[in-house]
Length: 338
Image (tube, rainbow, N blue to C red; front, side, top):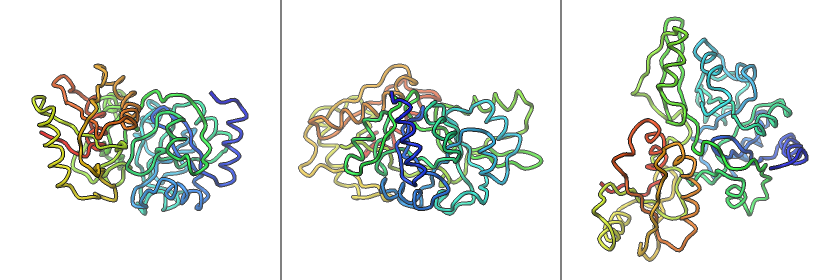
């Protein structure tokens, strides 16, 4: 764990307009001040991230968040009180303080208050919110330790504040909030640790009128592309447990060859000499523990002497927490074999 000197160094670099790797309870973020355009631009350059993918802004208080949006209503206040600091991002109409680069030109901005004490200390001491997407190259596996970030950006001399292993292990729930004077529409754009049932319980106890809307565009959420979070070698999700060994390898190679080389700016990995071996991804029986371990396991297996990773989906892996994990797992997969 870093000492006060390390935290001071991170703050100093951020004040100078540098990007810094910071810990949160979800995944590590690549952070920059929201009031220095060249720093925001550097996030996109370092991550090799297309400018159409918006960034989440991290705050240290509700008061900071209120300045970032033109509409902070009773729903936003209630959810902030119940779930912040924590893994809930709210998409709200942006204020003039938000650079359009952060929102990819959209009129809304994602805001959250991270739970990790070091992230909060940095933002408080800095006095400025931070734009901070996950600290990895675009489309690749998110980092859940400082080592993951160092390894990802080893050639770019990016300072990383070491806050230990991430507690949650997958990105925050992203909730689109559209409030009017009469009612509020809510849409979950990215599933996470905070569930729809948690949000519903929070608002019902306050007798706030709302309803969930399913059919909305997810372009306002980061990580909305078909392929994201991908490991160093192809991940194959197999729903047919009878398919294994040489028969599975033949199926994988045939299907990989049929895929385009790139989908929505994300390069699809295809071993030059084909897939000849695979590692099995095993997840814990508890979906909360499985989510915490997921990205680390993808990285560990991706560094082994295998051509791909295979995950067999089990019948018991059902329910809201599993759904949140499978949102990442399915996007991390090059192939899903029914």
